[in-house]
Length: 66
Image (cartoon, rainbow, N blue to C red; front, side, top):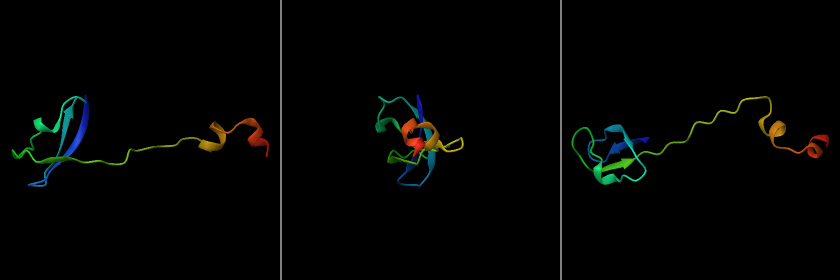
């Protein structure tokens, strides 16, 4: 089960809903009873840790010499 963020097109309420991948939009109702909702997409959070993520992790030894 994944948690998705939705926004009601009528009243503007934002809410979260846990759904399996197989469930569709037809079962989603906003807290105020409206059925016209849209999924809100956002950028994933990415954190790079370390002292040079690309240069220390993905380059071959021959590239490091030059």
